Amino acid sequence: MFKIILLILVIWILVVVSAKSAPPENPDPALAPFYKSLMIPGAEHISCCSETDCRPVKTKMKDGKLQMFADSTIYKDGNNQWVDVPQNRILSPRENPTGEPVACWDNFNGVICFVHGSGT
Image 1 (cartoon, rainbow, N blue to C red):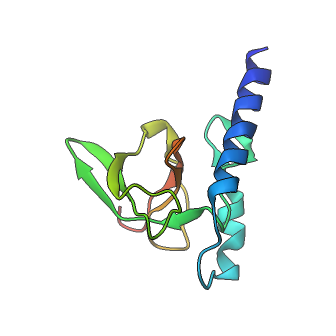
Image 2: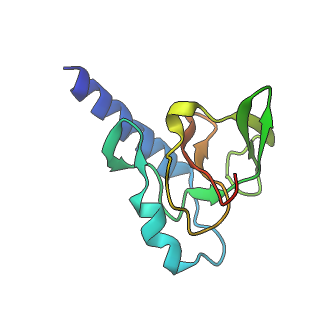
Image 3: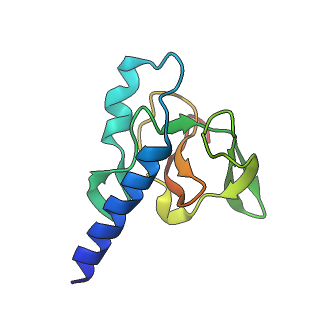
């Protein structure tokens, strides 16, 4: 029963996220397989990201916590604030061909998944 509820919740999250996302300008088609391969932590068969809703992000450490900047120029509903990246949303170790930190995020659900960039 718990798994069914979790699956329904994850599907709902994906619907909400995909409804708010717009493709980036000039997307690199070579990166599509990377984005499509990212799976929601704890629900490894459900993609958390695609080339339309995951983006490279600015990051920083504050009080020992990793934060990402929810930039309104990147995310349609970005709030231009630094938000905590929950440890259980970090996909690591994980190869990242963009070289930059990447996050799937929306204002309602927060960080859906996060991948460190090179050297972060």
